[in-house]
Image (cartoon, rainbow, N blue to C red; front, side):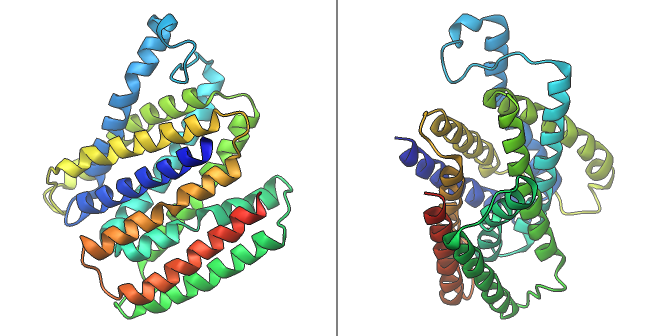
Length: 300
């Protein structure tokens, strides 16, 4: 049952990426991200309140949020900083890049996570995993060639740098998740509280960076898709954690399956955003997915 849940989470993540692109096109990035963190916190806050003031309602369910100490909150705050950094880079990059380029690059995150696990946790890559890494590197070289046809230079384009930084910080967050889970942190405690800390951080960033300069930058426009960014993200994360609650679920496979969300966002780029050079980029995407397949085979 946990594997179908992982694929459902991937589908929801693809919808999240699509709504994110629809919300950011020609729109101010920082207030969109602020509202995303607000709606995520609004959806998760009832779980914290019920767990604290009416624990009997959730205590035997996967929705229960255990109380934790101040030291643990500091660790969770660091998690919020990592995730928010990744989101900031990803949101700016998504606004300025075709989703058919940004999404496949972001899909490389499991590769960096594997390399990080090898360096930090002394994990080793087997033959299948090395093939997966190698094929994916070739795919990104081909993506850079496809990008040049649209005037996107991978070496000198700041938004390419941003999506790469989003991928690196996202991988760092994943490695940090492994550290937290292996040191007894409860998944729901991390999920709910880091969302609240992100909201606080984004409120500060909005007040200091965006609000004083709002008339000099891209104006903010409310769109219904902004709420659905948060809804699809919370649902994707919840299904992800629910999949992990099964005793025999494998975090390495679940994480990689979730990256198949790139298929949904790539299809949306072709159908709804009318992006260019789809045929060549579809071949590049296929190579990314083949790389993901070998990573999956290597973790079985």
